[in-house]
Image (tube, rainbow, N blue to C red; front, side, top):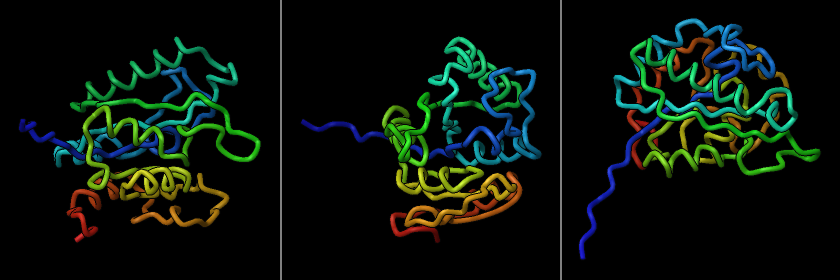
Length: 195
């Protein structure tokens, strides 16, 4: 029996706080969400190039009981609607609800663990080798790299530790989201790496 081939697509995984929006710790109030400069222009560039847009976010405030599941769900709906208002489709919003463990991540979904990206890859039929992760700290870079993606670091001052490691060197570093989008869309990813 012959099975039809699955059609895999590519995605750009997006850290939320400090990458898409100004970092307001533990915020779930849509009225306090401020999008970073050039984000929507950059997202439209990525979408036009065939990338699905997927948010990957650590949300430890849920386990810390700083906000409720209902409040987080409302924030996610806000992002879906804002994307739609800007002619964008948000294909997924994946989050880790766990607080960090004493000796590092206590789960497989909290970045720098790659679990959320791997889960999204399976659920959305994504080719992770043709996908990218954009974040503002090296934990985002490591999560993307460990999932098999290429990575971009938005160097806006939010990374303060600069801990080195085998998966913590981004493929590209920039201060501007639009520049990140332009870089990604001018690169052709093959099984042998960027051209």
